[in-house]
Image (cartoon, rainbow, N blue to C red):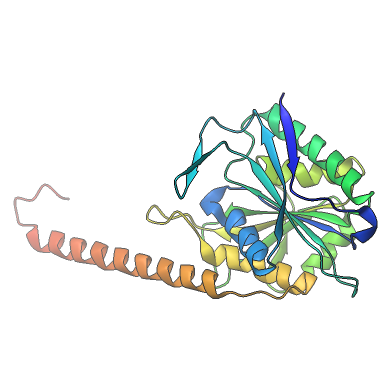
Length: 263
């Protein structure tokens, strides 16, 4: 299957410091993509590579009038040599569509990143969402991974919980699992609780929970202004929806008479 990488600039392995791979594919309520994109923007990461694959869907993207084929993009930020991690940040508008495509992407991506960094990657951290029937004021983050000690290190933080069983569909689960089991670097998956609502395409509150954990774990300086703005918009939409529903139900009760068909 066609898989092609284009680079925007060169990075020398000796210049890379304890790199971390952050992954945010689009998925449920775009929780992971919004979280990782927010971190990418706050860190002012530079677009390092563009990945083309024939397993991305046949949907062209249009941004500000520009027509483009679907790609995955990797951004890079060098944090200097003050004991801080460098970050490679992977995100895209679409995930690979087939099982073969997901596994092939994971294999080739891990091989390429291993070559670029000289085998220095500390961990692959993938983000995603988990549908929950009930959510507290702050969504919990369910954690699993290929290295038990690394999983425990994430569980020391607030609002985290071990994901003991289950299935993670798509590249959000396979990529970190492949990285860990094939000996590239330990893989971790962080899943934020979400309750998808028909009137909302995003769940910024779940995204913020992921960002908060990553911020504290890696000591990242974050600006939450955009996420907080999206959360406020979401709460306003939900509040408006509730008011409309209550108004509808109130009128419905008033309209019911003895001959009503409602029982």
